[in-house]
Amino acid sequence: MDVGILGGTGPLGRGLGLRLAAAGSSVTIGSRDAARAGEVAASLHDAWPRQLAVMGAANEVAAARDIVVVATPWDAVVPTVRGLRAQLEGKVVVSVANALVKQGREMHALVPPRGSMAGAIQAELPTALVAAAGHHLPASALEDLDQVLGSDVLVCSDHPDAKEAAMALMASIDGLRPLDAGSLAQAAAIEAFTAVLITVNIRYKAHSSLGLTGLGHV
Image 1 (cartoon, rainbow, N blue to C red):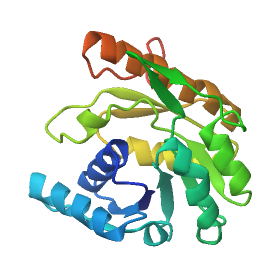
Image 2: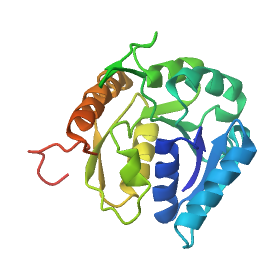
Image 3: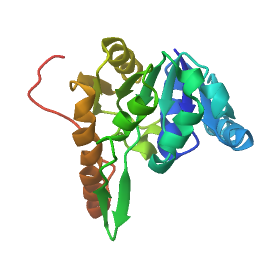
């Protein structure tokens, strides 16, 4: 796949970019600062000296790719996609953003005006095919290619093509099992649960992720 990651210099964006490149995708890590994106891409090459098709560029370049992941901090999501509306028209856009704030030793979920960050993206990009996925993935584990993953990934969208593309994207990474979680309305609960998962990890000094039982062979 040819993947662009908006705001890809953060922990989750870097980790996803690295794993997708290791799985054979061509990845463009985007940023408002193209030089910063280039530094992050170079650091991934230095850390993992193998054949990785990953480069750094401005967000505008990343938005031109076939499938685009939005991994910016939650408060920059709407301004970022609003400025790229023309490039993202008609494209599959995958949101991994969570609106969270830290209160003491807990993470608390915020409720965006549209109920979820994915919903906010869809409202800003009415012609785009928005899906939500990857919210519960541990960024530190993604950035360590020697670490074996074992996570379920809840995927939701109002567009069958977007859901299929997002599930294929996640399935391309070894150890991830994408699960169809329904319409984009489910993104509100999926994103909010990230606060609970991070709080548990803070308390137990762990890097746990989501795993559902009882599904049998999916």
